[in-house]
Structures are given as structure tokens and as C-alpha cells.
Length: 239
Image 1 (cartoon, one colour):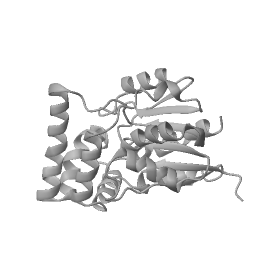
Image 2 (cartoon, rainbow, N blue to C red):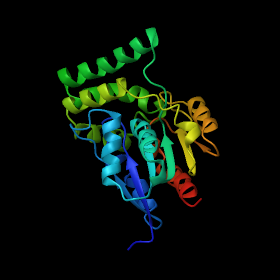
Image 3 (cartoon, rainbow, N blue to C red):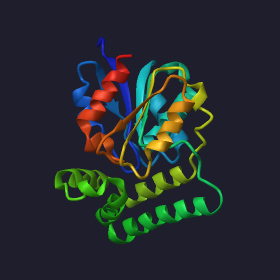
């Protein structure tokens, strides 16, 4: 039996284990990292959380990136006694806003879906990346291609299911004050989708949470600055 900490990793929208590969390798001396993979059956964040709990051991550390962070909060809501450590990265907690703000978000998501179905995932990814990673990384071909190829392993139909799941996302704000395990809240300093100020608010709402802001990183922090994120995760897991 391994003495390492079981670590369940939750990828975000259109992402897979690639988001976590660097961290799984870097933390392999202290943690057995396993990434969940979302399928056509995971039609809501709640179903993703249920699948995570079904696949996980009795107790485990849990980290979620972007949409995966929202799933992590649902996992904690369902089974707080099973989660030994919690980390959410480049994420949010609020449900879809009412009024014009909510309509604008839905319009943006539908725009990307339209590109995916009419022009393909690669074309959609190029458009999406304009806001996902900072301007100074847009010409970083290895990074850009790794992200695009990850997206291309998904279909437009999977993209639709996950976008609908996010539009119907639960309000996770009620979970925050209930969290009792060691918690790390992390984002890139240059993440315009999930900005530092939002993560500061999340960290303040979770008792004892640690806030980590990764320099020179945007929304894909685990792939943009893998060493810095892995180091932060090591500090969190060793609490």
C-alpha cells in the first residue's frame, strides 16, 4: 500500500489530464495524482462531482482547475468528510448572473460553440486563446499547440454539453465558509477570465485559506507556469 497522498485532479472546460501532467510528475514523490476525464455522460457539474466521488478513494486531496474548481466545490458540498485538502485554481463560485451580464456571458459561450460546430475545434481554440493566455504567450508555439491539441481530443458535442453545464452551474458561495480542510486558492496574476480579485474574495471566505498568485500566468496557469504551480501545490499538500 502506498504511503503517498491520493490526489484527485479535476480538469476544466474541454481539458483533460494534459492540464495536470506536469504536476502529477512533479509531486509523484508525495502524491498519487489521478486526473478525471469528462465524458458525454457528465452533463452537469453535479454529475461530474458524483463521478469524482464514485472514482475516488475513501479520503483524498482534491484540486480543480477552471470548471474543475467549480466541480471541486460540489464534491466538497456532497462529501466534506472525504476531502483532506482542497485547492481551486483559475475558477469562480457565482452562478450565471441575471440580466444583461448573464446574457452577455451566454452570448460569448454560444459564439465559441458556433465556431466549433461550423469551423471545427481548432478554429474555436484559436479564438478562445485570445483571452485564455496573456498576449506575451500567444506566440509560444509549444504552449499554444499543447492547449489546442488537448481541445481537439474533444468534440463539438462535448463542448456543447460542458458549456450547458457551466451555464447551469450551482452557486458555490454557500460552500466557502463550510470548508474545514487545508485550502489553497490559486490563479495567474494575468488571468483576465478568473482574475486575482475574485480569488482574493474566495480565499477570504474560506477559513484559513492560502492565496497563491502566479506571476506571468493567465488562465492556463498549470501549463503556463508548471514549476510555480507545482511548488505551490507541494506547500499545500504538506500542511
